[in-house]
Image (cartoon, rainbow, N blue to C red; front, top):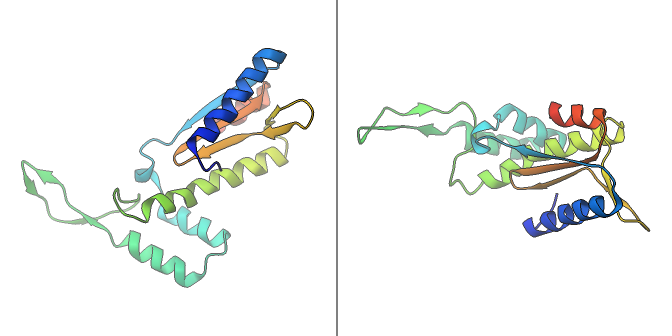
Length: 159
């Protein structure tokens, strides 16, 4: 995961620049989390926290914070009766960005496993001490970088 959005821009710029200069083939995929906060499944989030060894008590607190949320909708300026939410993170909740990062960590772990099992080949940047970059994440933006192959394309489309 990158810590500054400009780091990701710089890394991608270097990869594209190197690919042009060396005529190496590069594949880029931009992963778009449609309605990122709305799509987070609570069971998945709990499973990720469990895999990351979060204490059970902590996980219960988080569940209590997100699973007890109620909402209402304004119809012609009048609020409807409250109804329980079934998934997603609340916009404006100070916990939401951190919880989304935990959910996105699942994609990071998945990408690491896919690269380790050689289903996806990251792009090697640099000549003397090359470093392989397979994915960059910043908040709800994810970019996959790979060498050109049908396996890489299929894997990118699968995600």
